[in-house]
Length: 368
Image 1 (tube, rainbow, N blue to C red):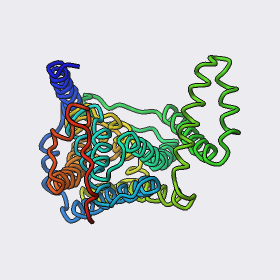
Image 2: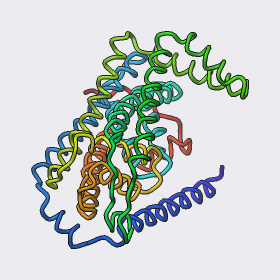
Image 3: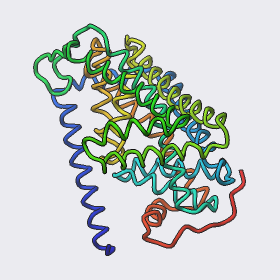
Image 4: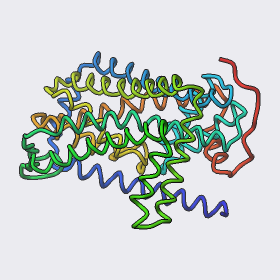
C-alpha cells in the first residue's frame, strides 16, 4: 500500500475515533448536573486515589511478570525487555485506534531480545489468552453479583434520560446466569484442551459438523493451535504461576477501583467493582477512540449505576473521570519512560511494527 494511502487511512481512523468519542460523551453528559459533578470531584479523598494508583501500577507489573513465563520458556529475555515491550505496546493501544499496540509489543520484544518477529507475535497472542483467563474470573464474579432479584432504577440524568428508567430483574437475572454458565464453560474448555485435547475436539467437531464441516474443522484447528500454545510452558507449574499472576493483576485492578469508590464515599455492594471493571474491560477490548475517551466512561458509569443504583448519576460520572485518569497515569508514565530508556520514538515503533521501515534491529539484550 502506498504511503499516501496509509496516511489517509490513518487520518480517517483518527477522525472516526474523535467522532465516536464525541457521540459517547454527548450521550453520557447531556442533562448532567454539573454542579454536583464538580462538587464530587472537589470533595474526593486524594489519599484513596493515591492508594488506587499504587494498585494500578502493581497490576501492570504483575502482567509483565505473567508474560515472563511465556517468553522465557522459548527464549531468554530480560524483565527489562518485556517491561518495555508491554508498556510501549499499551501506550500505543491508548494512543492509536485498532489495537495496534499488540503489533508494537511484538516488534519491540523482537528488537530488544533478539527473538524472531513471528515467534514474538505468538508470545503476545498467548499472553492475551492468559489475560482473558483473568477477565473470565472478573466476568464470573460480576455475573453472580448481578443475578439478584432486585429491579434497578436509573434516575433522571443517568444517560441523558429525562425520566427514571427501570431495569427489571426479570431481564437482568437470566442474562447474568447465562453469562456465569458460559464463563464456567469457557474455563472448562480451556482446562480440557490442555489436559485432554483429543477428547475435547471430538465432540466439538460432532456438534458443528451438521451445520458446516468446514466450520467444524476450522474451529477444531483453532482450538488445537491454542492447545499447542499452552504447552509452550516449561511445566504445569509455570502455567499455574502465569494464571496466578493474571489473577493478581486483575485483582489489583479490582481493589484499586474499590479504593476509588471509597475516595468518593460511595455505598456499594461487594460486586460493584467487578461489574464496573467487567463493563469497561469488554468495552475497550478494541480501542476505537483516542485514549479510550468516552469508550471508557460510558460503560464505567453504566456498570456502577447498575450494581449500585443508589449512587447519584453526577457522582458516578465523576468516578468514571477519576478512574480513567488514574489508569492513564501509569500507562503513559511507564510507556514514555520505556521509550526514553530504550531510545525509541513512538512514531518509529508504530511505523516499523507495521512494516513501514526496516526490519527489527536485533541487538544485545539490555541489562536489568
